[in-house]
Image (cartoon, rainbow, N blue to C red; front, side, top):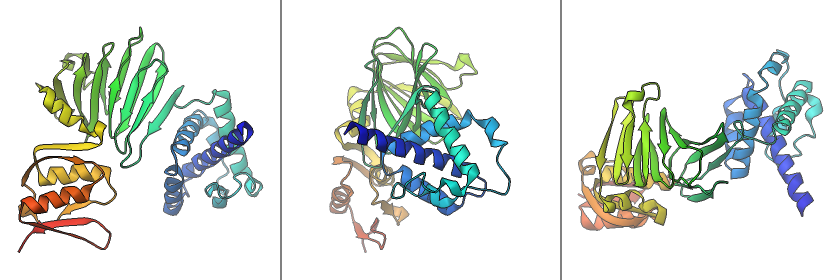
Length: 331
């Protein structure tokens, strides 16, 4: 069993290395990129392997000058694991050399990602809890991704997309969350939620305190946020306000698989449900977009939400040819 697991992991590593090579080629087509996205989305293992190989590839910039201008990898080499990954490498000397170099770099680096870090991600509708080596915890919401890297005496996590709750364990090393351009430094035993929004993010502190610096180049902009405070920042500025425990619970209702509405518009509510489901709720009549809603709904049950809306308001719903739910006024 151990040997089989090792062989499978090696196959994934080799496939990831080949994808890195192919995507770096200027001749990479849209179809190739679509095939890559499909392969990467098959599992977290595929995504993490690709991130590791991409990091190794960036360390090999000097090898790119060796690429012959007229020769490119055989796209058949880059098919998903249904085919033996390395069986056709002889068809492209350059592909063989580059893929081997990428795999070698990964081995030399000690199987690391981004200088010693690891990527964690969730799919649409999925939640995931990650316990780090220092007992800090990260809870990822739907369609989210973080990169964790402990180095130079700092515990650093970058929120790449989506939303997460970070619980910093007591440790002598600083715990830092990076979201967009901001740096968020958490005190020991702090708990905070960060959600990316456009070119900024929303930060909610549930426990402890954090220092939020939305523009690290301008130290004077740093804000100190304690438990019960929420802040929003983007390219136009930042602001903070105190919020109640009940509001914090509503913000974090997703941890129980729920969406808690308290006066949000129908447009806002639909956008929130769409984060968790491939079946989208679409408002086709602007006249109903501003309807105000309250209630507690399961994140993965858009149909129950729509039923509640149509029962409470003069709104009708139907499914279109793509399976999405469309909403408009009755009559």
